[in-house]
Figure 1 (tube, helix red, strand yellow):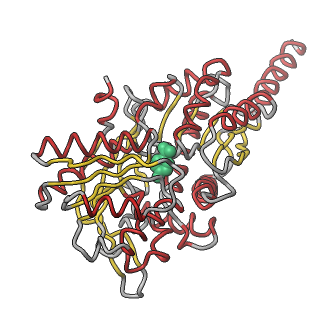
Figure 2 (cartoon, helix red, strand yellow):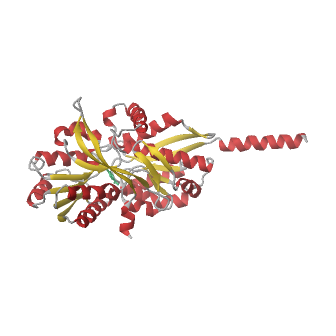
Figure 3 (tube, rainbow, N blue to C red):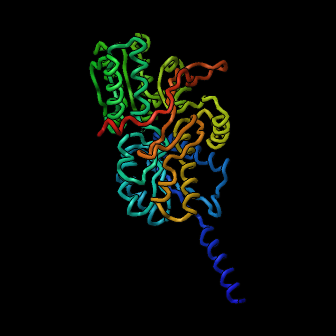
Length: 390
Ligand code: PHB
């Protein structure tokens, strides 16, 4: 009897001991270099989530390990992801600011039994690369579709499209074109710029010469967007009455102090504004503001990361901490919650986030600071990009 009791007790102890693990989450993002502020926002969102929800799930302790990838570099992303999985033993991969970096790591997922939670990269096709990808950010199809209708309904009939020549730019161009032409508008010219472009004056000249009434633009947020919006102003296009349409990447909050009047009045559509008026966002902005140090540096990658951690915590809960990528991903299909951005859910078919997209206008607050003011809501938007690619 005694032996049986001891054996049973030992089994219980071993069982709980086996579960009281450290579960590692590997986060790949730009933490140095020109896009460092975007990576800093990943970390602020993750820190905020863990400050508000603790660093344990059940008996397990969550540890986040960061790897720095300053600019889009698929080979480096694959090497870092592999190192995280093999040497560090991470059970989850997350982060990924740039599309090529997310794409490059997807072949590892099934062989390593590791889910990937994409916290930013916004090309529709990423989720189709592996059944173990879940995305908590947005796609440029999702954010650029509503602005096409806004542009046409506002009286603009001829637009020139200008995008960075890689995944999310090509998707944004296609999304705007589809929406704008369906409404009855005309794309007079479509320019694709190399990702490295930093002198935008020649582009501004081409916009002027095109005879378009408005420009649709997408570039990845960072020094790129800051430079583009500055050039739009400095080359006289804003003053000349050329209408400006873009997803919210172009007016991220952390760029607004430097842009000042150059950004005032610009209209964009996006999934998140730091000014979003809700109790959840108030709590989030306070915690993420504390985490980042200077709240004026807060921007959208923080909310993608915050919600990404929510998804990872749910996956860990569902698997009891065991390494089971299929079960983890299955558990979050259809998951819905109240995000700082508004109500969201993970679409079970695409594993991409369904969310509201807001029309915003850059406005000036009483204290002289600039912010994205939400003026209209497009509710429960899925990703039109995957269907369009079929
Ligand atoms: C991307 O590479 O997918 C990307 C990066 C920055 C953005 C949007 C998309 O603002």
